[in-house]
Structure formats: structure tokens, C-alpha cells
Length: 406
Image (spheres, rainbow, N blue to C red):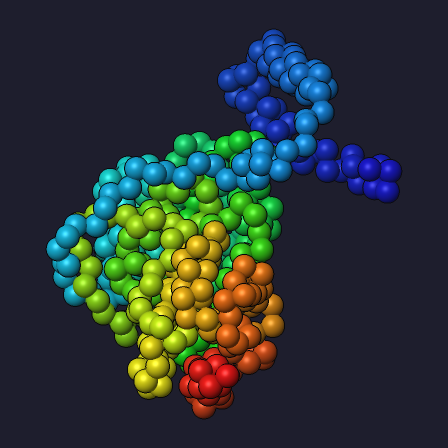
């Protein structure tokens, strides 16, 4: 601290909240001088004892397996399988709401936090009615400060409670980036303590919300060891993956495409169930080409496959970190051709990781180069016609035709 002027240090010492609180307690006759001295001696002894233990530790023997095993807490494998019955046809947004409600019924330690999520029900009304059912202690409005909300989630987790943090829009997570990539993601690696925090991320374009409310931000986090990144494409998956995420002892970034909230319906079991993280879904079998995608891209791929008349196998990743390499490789080895599709901009998008892994693991099975398709490398436009031009779906039919004819 030599670069800090001494007078500035002395000024801030006067504002030390611990010292001021100690003075307050003494002034209120709650804390005596003797008690204060005793506490200081006890704390000092504990610190010195811990410091001596740390200094006495020998250097670890390098082991890649041990090092990799320290990044994540063991996941909860005691999952509830979906019932055999299809259940009820529900919108994407309603399936997520059901999952939240049922998770809160099962786990009284689960707390929901976010801006305007209580009485108002959130920007997308996904938490509407939950404060009436579970109370303000468990469904909590927060200040407009993403970093503080995420830090609170971490603190609750260290105290043994689970939390769901809602970003109003995934774009706003930039204001809490440090808490996610440096604190949530690294806590288990540093301390061996699991972090049960699920961050819900309303994401994606196609709704005319412009460059600050429409970005695809998943690739910002797939590069960070310690995080789990989930991105469902159907109401069934949305509910089952969310309930699992809320039990996961590692921090989860849970992406929900805004366009799907009220435009997509599908059968969803009425009862509580889980789906495993890290497992892809083959939503359509085929022989001519594999399309690897996730989120809204799954529905683009289904439409393009129908229009082309090709026998396309469509693999929905569902989880991006960790992603299901085995299912992808098995499909590519069968079809010999692969298109990796996502809504995110192309350069630096997560599709590049998938494509490179396929090239390394499946090269001798390929009949064509692995092709990638993403949206334009520009901000997301407000204008409807420009937004349509921006999106990867605008070039999907051409790209699929090019690959099939190769």
C-alpha cells in the first residue's frame, strides 16, 4: 500500500465498519472491553493456527486427473425419472414456471431472487404468483445490481441454501460477470465447497428487442471451467433440466430463448421430474447429414430438414458445458456429414469448439468438411427486416443444400 497516501489510509480507518460496529456495541453496553479483547485473542489464535497448517503443507504431486476432479462438485445422481404419461400440453414459459414452483415445494431452502420477480412476476411473468404462495422471504425482489444478486446467491450457497437468480435479460449479466467467472465458477476448486446457484438467462433475438436485449451470450461462459451451461429447446426439456439445475451443486447458467416462451407448446408431465445434465437428445434420426444445434436452432433445423427433403439427424445438445461428445460423434460417424448451427454470431461461437472436436475425432468418417453456421458478426438490429437478415436461419437452407451436394 506504499502508493496510497498515509493520510488517505487514516481517513478510511475512521470509516472501518467493523471498528465502528464494535464501538457501537460498546456504547450500547452490549460488548465489554474484556469481551472484545477475548474475541480478538481467539480470532488471532485461529488465524495463526490455520496459517501454520497451510505453511506446513507439502507441495502437491501434479496429477491431471486430480486437478480436473477438483473443478466440479459431484453432481446429484438421485434424479426423478419423468412419468410414462405425456401430461399436459404447455407453453415453454409455463413449463418453466411449473418447474420452479414444484422445485420450491420440494426444497424449502430454495430462494428466488431477481429484479421485480415478486409481486410483478418478472419481465416475462415467469414467477407470477410464486410470492403469494411462498412468501417474500423466498421470492425476493432485489436492487438493480446484478453483481450483488449473484454474490448473495454465493453467500446463501455457502450457508447451505440453494438459490435461483433471474437476469431480466441475459445481456445484463455483464454487470455480474466477475461474480460468475471468478467467484461462483472457482469456489469448489479453491475451497472444495459446492455452489448451488442457478442463473436463469432469457436470451436470443427474433423479438425486435435490439442489441442490448437480444444477444446470445452462451459462449462467454462455455470457456469457464467450473460452470455448467444449459440451453433447452422444448417445454419438456425446459422443465426437466431446470428442476435438475436447481439441485445441481455447481453454478448453472440456464439459457431460455425468449422467442420460445409463448410461441412453442409441447407435452409436459404434470408431476415433478428431472432430466440429466450433459446428455444430448437426438430429436430426429437420419442418414444423410447430422445437424448439431441447441435452443431455437433445433426448430430451425427441423424446418430446414423438412424443406430439403433430406434424411437429417438432428442432435439437440441441451447442455453446452459439459457437452455430450459421444452422442455427437456417434451421429457424425453414421452420416458422414455435419452442420453445426447456432444463433450466436459465428466468430468465437460455441460451434467452433464442436466443429474442431468432430474434425479431430471423426475425420476418417467424414465425406465433407464440417460446416458451421451462425448469425452475422454484427450487433443484433432493432429493425425487423435487418434482424431477419442477421439471424443464421436466413442462410440455413442454402448452407444445408451446399453440404448435402458436397
